[in-house]
Image (cartoon, rainbow, N blue to C red; front, side, top):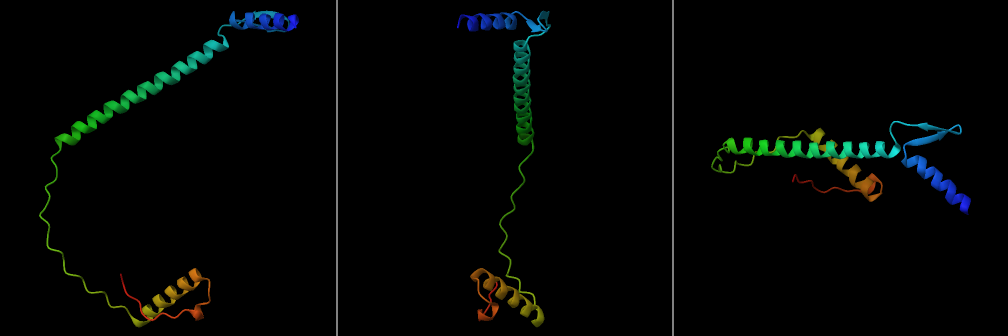
Length: 124
């Protein structure tokens, strides 16, 4: 058990004192792992804070631009236009529409088209 703690202490000593063991020799390193992680985290958070500031500034600029532009004048409500007459549909085109509706209904109900009987169609 003492051997385990002695080895762990040895490893931690070299980890935190900026050194590593390679091939049985102690080699000095320039940047430790902890420093790299800290620099990465600091960089990420600094960039995120910069993005937040830039977005806030752009939001303020857009609000000022929107306030300077006059609101468009609202025209008085015009009388409702008269309902336009439905365009004339040829008989063949009407039959194609009825056939398409019948097929859609039959497919939805899961039955054969011959069992579907359409009495009237109203445009909504």
